Length: 370
Image (cartoon, rainbow, N blue to C red; front, side):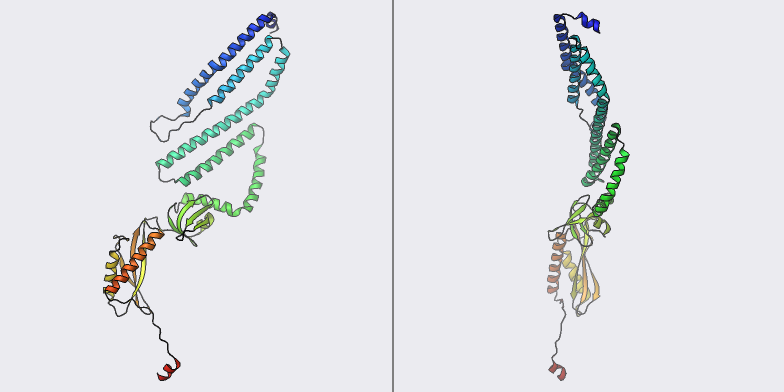
C-alpha cells in the first residue's frame, strides 16, 4: 500500500487518480447501481412480490419495494468508498485506518439496524398480504361482514406487530421475558380496573363469530328494541322507534335474550278485537278476515287468520293474525293501523257491535227501592 502511495508522489498524478476515482464513483453510483437495483427489483416483483399467476384472480396482490431508498444507500456507500480511496492517494493512511476501525466497530450496530429494518419491512409486507387476502375473501364470500373483516384484520395486525417487536428486541439483546412479566402484571392491573370494558371487548368478539344479528336488523333485547345501526368491538348501537339511539355494552347484549325480527324477512303480527256476545262468531270471523285480506300492507301468503282466543267480561275476543314482509318498526305500525281501520269499518258495515265494559252506579235510594 505504501509503495503505491509513494509511486503517486507528484501532485499531478494524485490529482489524476482522484479525478479518475470521482468519475468512476459517480458513474457507478448514478448509472450502474440504479440499473442493477431496478433490474433486481423487476425480477423480484415478477417472481416473489406479485401474485399474478392467474389473470383476473381477485386474490392476486402486489407489494411496492422501496427501490429509491436502496439506490440512495448504495450511492452513499460508493461515494464514501471513493472518498476513503482518495484519502489514501493523498497519504492520509492513519486517518483512513482510523475511519475503517470506527466503521468496523459500528458494523454490528449497522447489521442489527439493517436486520431490524428488515423485520419492520417484512411485518409491513405481511400486513399488506393479510389485508389483501382478507379483502378478497370478504368480496368472494358472504360469510364475512365489513365489521368482521375490520376486527379480524386488527387482531392479526396486533399479532404481527407484537411478533415483530419481540424479534427486534431479541436482536438488540433485550430479553423480552422481563417485559412480558411486566406486561402481565400491568395487564392484571388494567384488567381489574377495566373489567367491564374488557368483558364487552370479549363479548364483541363472540358476537362477531356468533352473528345473532347484523347492521340493519330489527332486534329486541331485555330493555331495548329497535334497528341496529352500528356494531363495534365494545358496544352495539340500536335506534328505537322514537328515533333515540341506545348504546348497549356488548357484555349486556351477550347475556340478554335476543329476538331478531328480521332474520326470516317476514313477521307475524296480531290485533285483538272484541265482538258482542249476541253476534254470530262465524259471521264476525268471516267479516274480519275479508277486511284484513283487502289490506295492501300485509302478505297474502301466509293468509290472514281470525281465531277466537278468549271469553271476555263483555266481549268475545278474536285475534287477527297477519304477516308483513321486510319487517321494521315503521312497517309494523303502519300495517297494524291499516288493519285496525279495516276491521272497525267492516264491523260497522255489518252491524256487529264492538262492546265496551258497562258500569251501573246505584245510589242509596235505589238500593232501598230495590
